[in-house]
Image 1 (cartoon, rainbow, N blue to C red):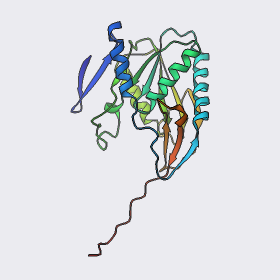
Image 2 (image 1 turned 30 degrees about the vertical axis):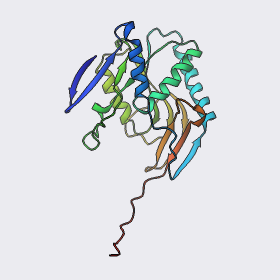
Image 3 (image 1 turned 90 degrees about the horizontal axis):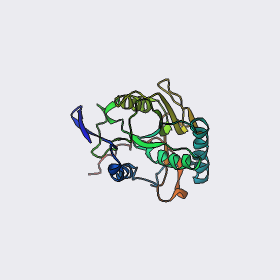
Image 4 (image 1 turned 120 degrees about the horizontal axis):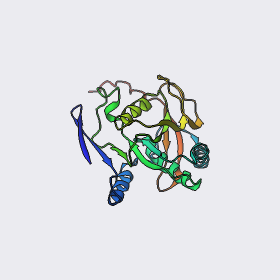
Length: 229
């Protein structure tokens, strides 16, 4: 493990350097998975249920497997935080298709272009890379593709660690609204959402039957109330 400082904060980068580190590496991945799942949100509508999401993930895995069945150094990196649970599901589905891949996470906190307005939270998921990315085929995984800024930040973080042979993008949901020229290589679902609406993907690690794709209405600022005193 090595520690690097950036913009006044510390970044932890974990690498699997020996078989003895495997248990620690996997425990770090599990700890990095999103903990806030299946909260009931006011002003939301459910677009896709658990059955449709299961079919969508299987479709993603099938598409990836058809292209990378014989790829020697395939690396699946979930973009923290939304892409972590999806990367876990995809890795399992790919295994059923006979495709073996490394599994890790990419933390974009230090490459966000809005870091001045949104400081890095105290709890964040660190970058976890199971093996050298130089010459590897890397598939970045995220739950929702929107402006493209998250993907750009993930690419910046990835290339801090080396030069992959190929980088691809797999997303569960494309909601449109691109601000940067980014396009997914693999996409299972498309949704229409307004400018102020938020698309939320819930992948429950313990109860997949609770999975859902939701759209939350824009938050409305409460009207100022005059004191009666």
